[in-house]
Image 1: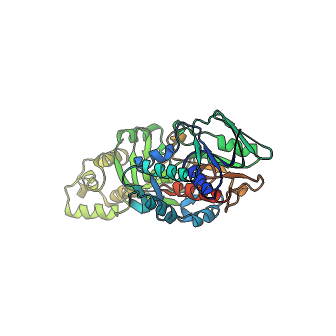
Image 2: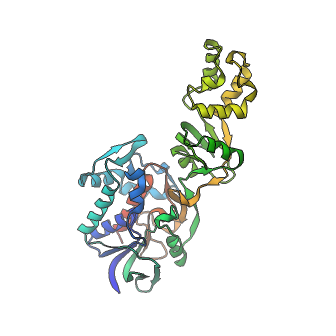
Image 3: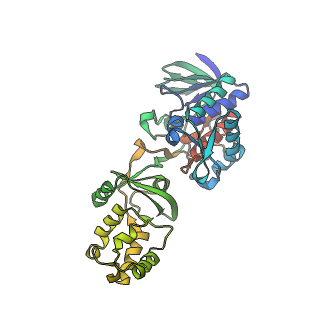
Length: 394
């Protein structure tokens, strides 16, 4: 059996950051990763360029049953702290929309940085640590395919259920329940929405078309690109909304958030009396989308000149454009979800140290905890911050 001070289960963003922080304190640390490679989600994130943090990491950008839980960790290891680490390693980066920071070159730069930091503080990293089980006596003992390991502190950084092909598992939730911790119901987050019936056929016909829109559900609104797919809707605004959508909920879509469709059409009616409704709208919306709307909502007027269309119908057309109500059938699930909503109940943990209140020496960090960020680098910042919180004391 190999003895350590800290065992970290999971070699993702949170686990590696925790190992670095603990190693800087002189702790003997081993990271046990189940898959054949560490940091797989880091490597695929941001289209291979890793959206590693966001300039605007306010607590309101995070979802949890306890909205205040994330404040402590995020305030003690901020986006600026991680940016300083990135700059220390000479990694070039740039800002995209809404404060999102990406590597100029590759996600590999972030993973290499974390590995270098681990190496400098003698953190041992093992992969292929499958079939892990844990017992606690005087210390924590982890048995897996790579052997047995003991330590006074055990950090659960096993992630959630999203993207199972990357090695996701429910190990963290099983360990939490083993030690009597409450686990909140989980579901796929930051995930495309799917449809059935006629709406599924419509999105299929429009597959590949993207448009900027505002989407609303349960008094929450997000504005950004939406993408029609063969299964339904995707794109940044849809992924954001999926964190708040529940089965059976309608969603409201404003396809022209930057325009007043009534004013647009009535003005066009004056100056372009021979222009068809679909031609006017096709100046500001994808033509294929306008034709689908025409077929659904004003087929009898499809060939009429705009000048012959009554103002009340013009207003109904505009309302449909601004207030399109649809009901998703489901989501694409964990297969394509970027994160897992829910997880280990934050009431079980110290917000300052991430240690379990009724199981000393056991820490839970990252996605396995009931804290989920919006799209745009927030989940990585939670990983860095919660990893630091545990690594500074474990």
